[in-house]
Amino acid sequence: MLAHTFCASTYGVDAHIIDVEVHAQGGQPFYSLVGLPDRAVSESKHRVDAAIQASRMEVPRGKIIVNLAPADLPKEGSAFDLPIAIGHLLANRQLMNDKVPKTVLLGELALDGGLRPVKGVLPIAVEAHKRGFEYLLLPEANAGEAAVVSGLKVLGCTSLRQVVDWFNGKAEVAPHVTNLDELFSQHTSEVTVDFADVKGQENVKRAMEVAAAGGHNLVMVGPPGSGKTMLARRLSGILPPLSLNEALETTKIHSVTGLMRSGSSIVTTRPFRAPHHTISDVALVGGGSIPMPGEISLAHNGVLFLDELPEFQRKALEVMRQPLEDGFVTISRARMTVSYPSKIMLVASMNPSPSGDWYDPGNPEGTTHGQMQRYLSKISGPLLDRIDLHVEVNKVSFEELSQKSQGEASAAIRERVMACRQIQQQRFLGMDVHCNAQMSSRQVRKICRLDDAGAAILKRAMTSLGLSARAYDRILKVSRTIADLERSEQIRGHHIAEAVQYRSLDREGWLG
Figure 1 (cartoon, rainbow, N blue to C red):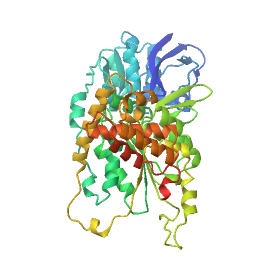
Figure 2: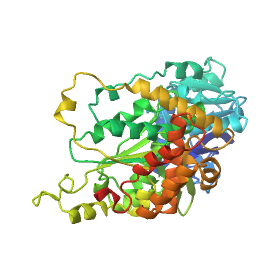
Figure 3: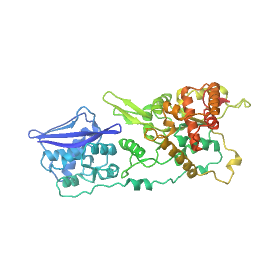
Figure 4: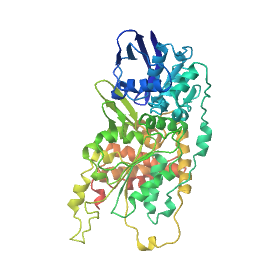
């Protein structure tokens, strides 16, 4: 007898429905699983047999062939256990068939017949709904995530026995319901680390406000102990909340990598990823035999923080150039090509020299001019070009540290950032652009119009600093954000002047 069940497998952040065919006939015991399965799928036979026995049902005997179609797509993961088990029971006539063609099945089987959670559930639920399936049956721990997709009956089960009883009409399983409005209303702007706790560094706080308001990349340069890491970790507290579309995009990426917590439904806060400087280029941008997203994609719609930027491998930093420019990563392998989104805010910090100190002409024992230049040369010019704001962070004085008064709270800064983002949302309505930093060169020319004073300041800066065309665009984008923060439709001279001062790392400008 030939039985059909349906499962799904993820490729990138999208999913494909997989037809699980189980052919059973009499004869000598023989089992074959075909369709490019990986090791986890190939080992499913042992889990399936044990789970069927533990559920007090008959394990099929004889010649059994399982085909995962289409056969030319690689299959990976343990989510195929449940559809294979149901296929066995259908082929052995232990199961009614009327609901099976309407159902996508997912789940890893435990040896006692229990269902364990799997990854990649949200993109699979989206594809199942798109393909017209009525039910998605999966482990109870994954039900909240899948139920984000409306129009699909998501049934969370705890065991193979419960699944079989539902198919046979002996048990009812209520569809899981996820209230997105309630989830987003529960998301608050509570900040565990606040800018109010930071003494001094007003210029850096201003730069971070501009970066957050326009989604701009930022690098901080300063000696050890000046507060670079502390400031970077407070950036999340002033970013605007995720929109529903951004939350779904982010959740898809976290889902396919298995980072969703058991029982969670959707990512409601912007990611903040801070990999160690020993990370490889593959871990940073993604890869593997079956390509998986890297840190730059896991930070999509959020912040990727690279502490001690020059200590990262040169190769790892250079492969970030294209994703930073295009907003996505394309990974090609012999059998497949996948793309992962990577629209991020890159925030980096670095010391000005190997010793951590600035060059001081009056200190012959200190860091030399050449040491600072060599240290900076670890970061290529093309990568620096893609960073909009370059900020010098100096040590905080005793007077500033001993002040009893607190600085401006993150909540107040966040209000201004959100108001600025509202202006940008109206500007880019109907476009695939969420903030000023994502504007194309054509959009920059159209939107970022200067007055005469601004044009004159920018011309002098381009000539004296020898800036590239990319740096020119970046200055215009930053000046547009500064103008938006002031609710100014026109980009004026002082907006350009502030944006230009944030290019201090270009060429030798930062060396004084």
